[in-house]
Image (tube, rainbow, N blue to C red):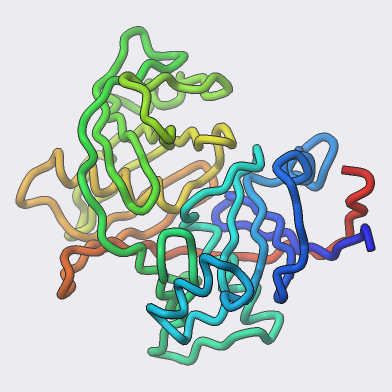
Length: 293
């Protein structure tokens, strides 16, 4: 059968095509995924999410040895068809999909563990949608970024939150607006697996009532500029806190073109974790004939 059902969803404008393939029998190649995500010739999305039971994927079987309750695996692909480790907005949309389709539940105070290529991620309900613990993070060296709209290269702080990011501080909202992110920023030295690039500007004042506030735009590897990027939002807040010093807060509000997402850093037994919270919506359902893509 060449026709498959899909659901379109988004988290602060970062949009995805979700396909239920519980048994893991659907095979989509890189070209098909790219055409499905194409905004002119396909459905249009920043990425594709295959909703698979963990037991039916090699990566998922490994996940189940760590967390037997991680029944579902988020098999995530960028818009160009390349596989990605994690997606912070996508996993919240994934949770919304599971709940609305009756495939999983999250009771108040409970967590929903989900398998990803970056391990198990725990999702909870939040006042503005869903919150996800992205796990441990780390500083990942420094680099330089050249971008269309900036006269000179700018230093970037590497942040790894399961996938790689290069965060660049800009001086003003005017600089942020002047970026032409239709062109891919150039990172030097070039990361082996590429990286998302975030450009951030602090609000004035940056800290309000104990919460940090920044604005951000992002260029996602394998996609281009997106209205939002969940892991990029976390990376931007982490880098800004690092630059600000020891007195910087552990809670942040990050404004992106698609909305506002919260970030929280918190201590755990295995080190500091970072989490994000924000809305997740399902837009519409449809059917696509794979013979046309």
